[in-house]
Image (cartoon, rainbow, N blue to C red; front, side):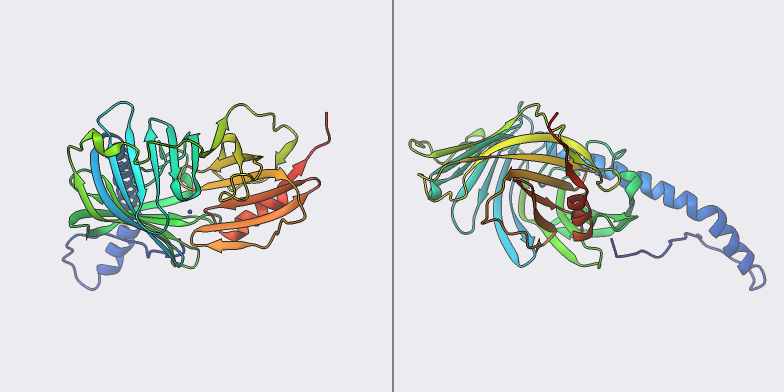
Length: 343
């Protein structure tokens, strides 16, 4: 998803000179040293991002992290087995109604016992903390300035801080803190176009090392009578839907059909089918949800943390556009959507 603009950084080393020669030396440093040092810093920062992704995939770890989105704060526990194949993971909500999600490779099953509901879907290209979403910087690097911004301690561990600052106003910036010892992502902040932290996620407790496989088993063995909702990933004919504009660097990553219900607490309520088209620039995501229109639908803009959302009617369909980008970008995407005539 920065408006926090950094002043150009020029490293001169130790210069012994007279006041007469100083302006000439400063001019030479601006012309020669700054581009080189910025390029080297960017390369090293991108290398750190590679370490972050490798660590999230290969390490065993368990910990508690806090997720803040606007005024909402949630506490979660994660248990991750990265040395097994496929990768296995368990994520538990520690606040409010109990909920847990189990990952086995790319398949995810989420249990919501209070609603007697279970969802199943393939994760696809989507990544979750502390995984780093982008497999390669080639997709996002042209749209961000990437640099190191110092060191800190997070969850009792020494961390290297990295900033990703957007070069346009169509996406948010990020600040990331990676464990210096292993590369694991310890904290991530999303920075709005106003320079504000609109979303933050950070470990408060963390252990890295051997994790017993018994810790990633589901807590709910008997799900008889639960409502099951599936997200089916398959090739969809969406040729009638034309999205004429998305921010630079964003491309379609997948299309999914979901079976959902408007009233999860009412088992008798009928399910409906919703199509989701997902775009990403390697860091942030924009989703377009398509469903049948009904008079109950409301199109008022919604802003929460890093998420912005608008809804609009398009003939007999209702579109919901939601993403981790500024509202201006969401509106432009919404205004660009067209439905062509039936072929």
